[in-house]
Amino acid sequence: MRMELIYPRWPKLELQTEFHLPPHGPVVFAAALPEEVEINFTDENLQHIDFDADCDLVAISVMLTSQLPRAFEISREFRERGNKVIFGGIATMLHAEEVQRYADAVFLGEVEGRFGQVVEDLQRGELKPLYDYMHNPPDINLIGTAKREILDRELYNYRGVQMLDLVHASRGCKFNCFPCCTGFLGGRNFRPRPIDKVIEEMEAIRNNRLFIVDNSLAQDRQWLIDLFKAMAPLKKKWVSHPILDDEEVLKLAADAGAWYVYQAVFDTSDTIRNRVKRLKDHGIAVEGTIILGTDDQSEDDIKRLVDFLIEIELDVAEFTIMTPFPHSPIRRQMEEEGRILSNDWLKYTADKVVFQPKQMSPEKLQELYYYAWDTFNADSGHQLKMGELFKKVIRREMDDGTYHRYNPRKRRIFKKEGA
Image (cartoon, rainbow, N blue to C red; front, side, top):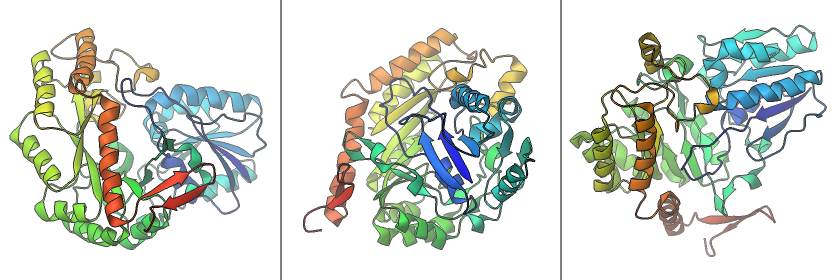
């Protein structure tokens, strides 16, 4: 059976340096497919789709709400040619009812142990319109090493710099943060993968730089201690979402190769100041993820927040505008209050105002978004700040003998001389 697996393009965050990480959802999905399925993968952000491809099924993997309009166009093109199309992924789960209008089948939930049924139904000519496993997660032990060989590795370099490979060590999240859909998507229970399986996958990744994409590395202290101890011998360098603010955990994270973390910064409190300081004291850089437009923020609050980020010497900041994605707690609140201004999914890129802010006009919030980026980066610019982060990790790699550069022409890895 031949499958075309498509990852649609989407409009990138305005003002952020554009780069492309290897997508995670498609390679995890590919690993869960029956062996008889032959896959051709296309990342439309970097490749062209062959709409005349000879295949038995087109699978469209949609991570972001802003990918949906293009995903619907792609589906229409393939279906007009007589192809069967199935949708899956995070945005599919968030917009399931709408997606069903554009697909022959929709797959909801986690895929491990489930897609064989889809293949059997397709081969019998009995493909169902909906495969719903949303509230029935599979056995965590079924998660295997992602099938990264479907990717064209040459595409995922930025100006000759090797980008990060994505990996996950757990699913689900016990927290229920107001802008986040994770509780709806993966459940409110923390579900860690067996550590030996995680290490096995990390060892199999040729790239020395990883992005651990777990929703939070702050959910189970002992599991984190055990994970970081097991990771240390790999000498990988990695990025993650927040790490538990605990002295022993942070030391072990640094020893295990923590490079920088995405840390939500939502106020100017000493809690945030001290958390950032502790991370930096352990040699872990910080990229702040800053949401603008929360109900408790005035114009002056946002300007003070930007000054605070400069004061605490945040390494990098990614400013976004609060966006009421479907099935997030803030979406429910804003729908009840009649504050949603747009359901144009192309605007749901977290850099456009699609709701009525509580303390200012939509136009003022959009203006403050540009103010935040320009003011924080006035000294050197976002690209140079990211460049400094990469310089730090290269120094660390050279110190421990793991630095290498990738030659895309010869498709070989050249290690540091003498390493």
